Structure formats: C-alpha cells, structure tokens
Image (cartoon, rainbow, N blue to C red; front, side, top):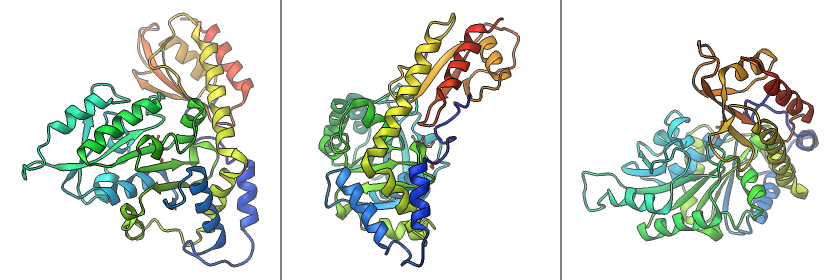
Length: 352
Ligand SMILES: Cc1ncc(COP(=O)(O)O)c(C=O)c1O
C-alpha cells in the first residue's frame, strides 16, 4: 500500500533492459554517442519539433533550473503558481541558476493561475522602473502540484498573456505524460502549439531511473544551456545511460502507456474511497494524484495496516478521531491493484 510518490516505484523493465543493452563496450562520452543522438531525435519526433534544442539531465530540478537559468536575467522575475515546485520545493535552485532572479507567485489558488491573474501580476511591474524587477518567464506546472490540469485552452490563454508581455512560457512537465494521457492530446498540442516555449519533460516519475529532457523550441534561447549545465556540474560523462532511458521511454509509446496506467490506477483508488463517510476530495483528481480529506481515525487505521503516504495538512497524532487530515495519494504504473483493494478495505473498515 505504497502511495507516497510516483518516485517510489521501480524502473520499468523495458527501461532497465535498455540500460543493460547500452552497457556494452566503449562509446564516446559527454553526449557524443549515437544513442544520445537517437534519443534527442526521438524527443524531437514526439514533440514534432525538428529544430528544438534538447538536453538530457538527471533530475526535474536540473531541467527546471537550467531552462529558467537560460531564459531569465538575474534582475528579472519568474511568475508561477503559489505552490509551484520551482518556488517551494527546489531550495532556490532556479534563483541560484538564474544568478539571483526573484520568484513572483501568481493568483489566489495554490495549484494553478489563470490568464487574468497572470495579467494582473505582470501589470504590477513597470519595465521602465529600474528599481523593480524586470519581466522574466512564466512557469506553469502540468500536472500541477495538486494533481489538477491546465486545459489546452488555459495554456493557450496564459501563452497569449506571455506573448503580449514579451516573456517566454515554461512548462514544468515532471508529469507531462500523465497530463497528455489524461487530456488525450499530443506533446506538441500541449506545448509549442499552445504557445509554450520550453518544457521540462519528465520521465523519472513515470518509469525511468533518472532522466528528464529539457526541450527548448527556439534554439536561440538555448545557447547558454550547455555552459550552465557544465557549470552546474550536471553534465553526465557516461551520457549513454541517460539516453538509453529516454530512448526506451519514447519507444512504442511506452511513456503514454505507463502514464495512462498510473492515471487509471489513481482513478480506481479515488472511486474506492469516494463513498466512505467523512471522505472529501480537496482537488479534482485529473491524473495520478489524489488529495483527500479523511478523518484522523481512517488515516490511523490505514497507517497501522502498513499504508505509506504523506499527510499534507494536520497531524496523525491528536485527540479528535474525527478531525479531517489531508492525505496525498499518488500512483505510478507499477502500483498493485491488490494494494488498492486492500487500502479501500482498511479505509472502509476503520473505526473511530
Ligand atoms: C512538479 C515537479 N517538478 C519538478 C520536480 C523535481 O524533480 P526531481 O525531484 O527529480 O528534481 C518534481 C518532483 O517531485 C515535481 O513534482
């Protein structure tokens, strides 16, 4: 009953096999190998963007920080949602990699902002006022940190505001595949066709061991990326092992297959706990993450039975058995359906 994170699951066997196949003989290092060229080409194919600059990096934080570093001057501000990973979960990596840019949270919701809220946030800055921040990129997260989605229309609306303000739009796509599978759209439709300039394209949470692609559609915006990557100590010498993962991830639609499976498992978990007394969903489940209020006694019964997930608001210890606590439940492709059934049984059978 492990629902703490889609980072907790194993590497997909097809990706592990690809790593084993890549583990033969000597090949050029630092990305000069054939497999890296092939994987980069596959990313371009999936995004229908033959000219895009693509870099393989080991973590989502690296993809975000290096892309934002390439798009932002030190005196500019990056706009994002209140709970954006780049704002609250990366220990200032974007600020460090931009040389000190500031982050400006947008809107009142914690997971998403809309085009009007972005317009308001941007209008608070006067680009002629040298005492204020300059306008920098906008970063939206898809799937959001609360498991919700931006529709393609919402992304296009945000992109329109970016275009008017003359700033680029970045998508933190740590769960890009889960979003594409849920929306039933192509990678191109959810990115450059909607006006997105750069994507952190995740794979690690969806079956890889450790690889993400930084995709920058206009190569002119990517000229500094490689130097920043080197300076940030994020260039793998044995790049073939990053490439092998991304290559397998994008072969025969594996990336969408694992994402659709993760979404399906989360939907099953959601519908199993939906009818339980005192259970209330904090956000609509739109992909593979569930944020749910459940009484303390239900959480306790689950944890006592060996369930493992995060409590996002409230404490497991406390006197009132009925006090609602916010749980975060995440599925990846590898979750066992028997564990979902067990979890639902324990939640249903919990007694105050
Ligand atoms: C939305 C989002 N972006 C970026 C990241 C960063 O990924 P990593 O932990 O690989 O640096 C995460 C990881 O949890 C995430 O949820």
